Length: 409
Picture 1 (cartoon, one colour):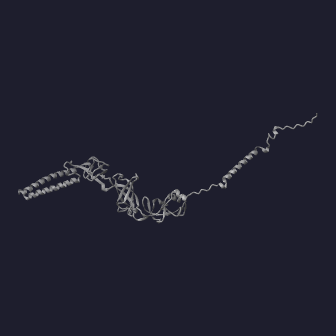
Picture 2: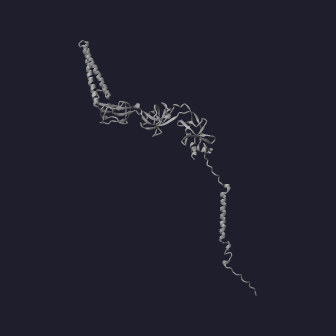
């Protein structure tokens, strides 16, 4: 059978097959395009989310006071945060405290100088600086030819006086028996009177030289230096073997139970102080130690260079808290004008602005007025105001530093 043969379809090469070789229109460049578009879309969405008007963060306003001319305004939160407290001005008495610096000194009423009184040679020493001594206690021994002569005169005149006394008594008996004349009796009495006077003069000389004219057992010429008071030796100016003269001060002794504190009080404070005012002393080396005293003396003149006067404070130093020469601070409770009514504010309310004492006066709610003031006396807690306030005012007593800081912002 003759069959018609159909022509065979041409075979395609794998290199020209659509499934094996993508066309130029659907190549890699088209994939990169779509990836970039996706990234741009994401960035746009993110940027919209960040900068959208609905999510804008509010602006933070600092809560600080503001200064308007002579007023400072602040919020309630600020006042609570810094602890601002308002205190009314007080009208009433004030006992001011005058603070000064002073030096501890010896009380002259309880100081003694022991002199040698005569020329001689120091034989021995019994006591030295810092020793506690009693009245009459021997401090040193001095050998003196001058004292020996005076003591010899006493003994010689004592013997002659006894002889004159015996002769006068015998003449008196003879005269009574008419065995002697009145002239002989009178001469014997005059002789006794003479030697009696000479003996007393010699005894007085021995006393002046520091000897005991009635001590028959005393070594001739031995001068004993004795303490005239109870106290402590604070100076010694002799040593064993030293030659001394009559006006040489050998020892200085002080009773340290009683001391003075010398203060220099300025003229403007002097009128507030009177004798008897209480004083509290504190050591510069140890401010925790407080010592009580009393004003014992107020100087009668003001030094022209310092414009101050001397004020002396009596101190009981039996506990030995003070040493002569020490520096101390003193707070005098000045009572002279303490009864008068004055304008008073807490000391914490006063600050210094541009070199002027200043307070902050309450001026409405959450506002204060800057007030320059003139100060008077003060104590540890309160301060007198002479000018710049009225009795109806109230002042900031706590938080003053925070308000002052705003003036220099």
